[in-house]
Image (cartoon, rainbow, N blue to C red; front, side):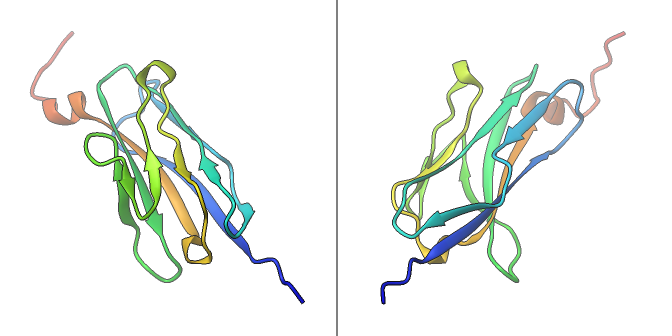
Length: 124
């Protein structure tokens, strides 16, 4: 018999730093896929500041680890993510999903301006 392997992916969004109208919206999980199928996990954001976006992956019984970040590499372990500023998106894609990709995926945003300023500047 030919058994179809399925993969469960749970996507979660996180926002680091203050909110002030900033937000991250992501594919609501869990997502179940067949092995070898293409996949895309959506991540869109709203921010008034310069932002950095990250995808983290957390495998079963492991700590989260950085998968991709918007400022440098855009491919890792077959996953790709491109920051499209005009669409405010940083979607995670993979052409052929594998059983070993079963995990939690987190889209994380930080705003670099306020984090860098660190409250040293006061504007009334």
